[in-house]
Amino acid sequence: MNSFAHSRMAWVVWGIGVFAYAVAVMHRGALGVAGLEAAAHFGTTAGVVSTFVVLQLAVYAVAQVPVGAMLDRFGSRAVITTGSLITGVAQVLLAVVDDLPLAYVARVLLGIGDACIFNSVLRLLPRWFTPRAVPVLSQVTGMAGAVGQIAAVGLVLPLIQHLGWTQGLLVATISSALAASMALLGIRNAPPGQESSTVADSWREMPRQVAGVLKHPATQLGFWIHFTCGFTYNTFVFMWGMPYLVISQGLTQPLAGVLFTLLSVAGMVAGPIIGTLTARHPLRRSTLALLVVGALVVTWTAVLLWPGRAPLALLVLLVLVIAVGGPGTGIGFDFPRTSLPHTRLGAANGVVIAGSFTGSTVLILLMGVFLDLISGGRSSYTADELRLAWTLQAPFFIVGVAGILTTRNALRRRMADDGVIVPTWREVADRIRRYRS
Image (cartoon, rainbow, N blue to C red; front, top):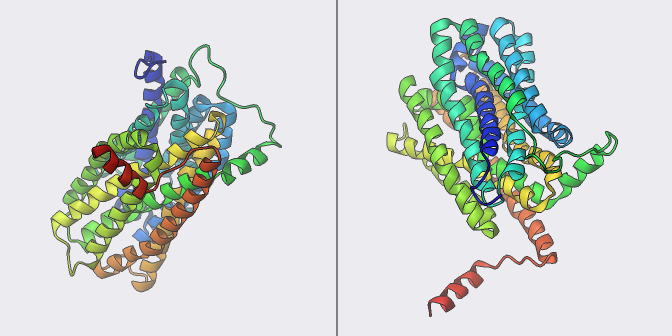
């Protein structure tokens, strides 16, 4: 297929996958925007509700590698269909129960179902589209997550507020049944006439194959980029962003909702830009990721050190930079794509996806425990307590940057063995000067 001369079927297959992913993110993010309503429904505190999110994200992260292995074996169609059905069942269960143990079961199921979708859509892209189009389309796929997050704010939250917890969630769950039906009927793992994109490893061989994927420096670099660019985004969106904006920064809930919408829209704008830069400058992909991380560190430092409430303009800047961190995670997927066979991309991308979700799971949990400790078990937190909780990000950034630099060096040594040398910035500058002279 020539660049962007892709068949209509390619766009249909991808579009269905994107819709399924948006639906999964909508359900994933529902508790992040309806945390107060969830606390009221279950008669508990926001700190306990945060454990719902932690459990879901932990399951999502842990499930990535086994789901990726299943994806390599059975293909995207089967995994997306199954994942959408599991997600729907999870939300139905969450809607009809009112005790915490069953609510935790629902979040475990949601984490498993959610883990099946995004990786499956990414795995379709190299089969249906040209290599140059894949980085951009990967970012556009990620933008569907922003659409899903907007739907969580603009659809699920109003449904819960107007129809009540049970009826609101049940109505929203119809979308999962639709996504599963569309995936089953419309998705194909590879274009007609092309060889199967799945592998027939025996169950005994799968651990060895997955271990090989885990050991590859491209997979490891992708993991650390995803971790460092994305843990703050997930923590902000799924749990502690809304309480921070409302309680610590004194914004009204509608205004905080506007900032959440801005975050989603900004991520949609930034995604194709980062995807284009990734495709045009493949030897500088990790540098682009480090620039995103640097912007996150600088902006969070400014907001957290600001005496009292930060100006609205600075909060808008923070939201915009966090939004760029979302697409920044997508840079991580490009390293396995260009270094590993496509039949192993399910497992490799699963490892990468686990990056930010591992980080955010731990951070959300730490923030919840920390807040409960310093608040003495109160059901609400003060502005200073939330500000202190967000400073717990610092060691995550340090570990993440160290991981990026270490694994980048390992990958570049392997690339050098294959004859691909990444020039230093001094060499690039000398080349530019010679060209201009």
